[in-house]
Picture 1 (tube, one colour):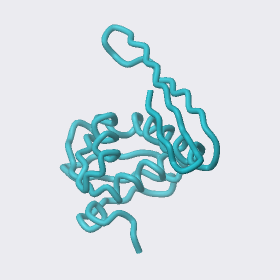
Picture 2 (cartoon, rainbow, N blue to C red):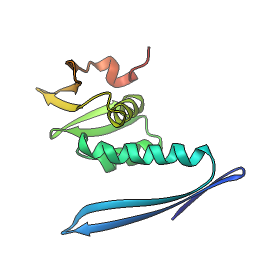
Picture 3 (cartoon, rainbow, N blue to C red):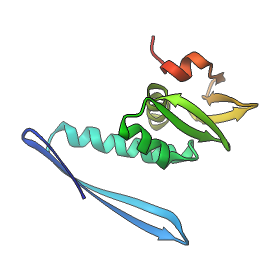
Length: 132
């Protein structure tokens, strides 16, 4: 159980996991509290759990992100990429919001898959994210 106290608002989180033959089967979180912090935190947890579908090492990369690391290692299609926390956050949130369909790799390059077309990710986007 994790307890976070922010002024008058308090958030309590209990995590429950069930395992099936060594693999994590389900993860349930009971989040209680008041205010917008609970809603924001619930969205963040849901987005990180949804990232399981596009990032192979979703748990390790989510832990690196929550620790505040600037460079995060993600594995997509068996290949490892080091991306900025801005890029990681953008990808996870865009996938959660269904703005992108996924990530694929092609000859050591990362490609963002959308409904309209696929975008090759260059070094600038990996370092800075989608900042204009």
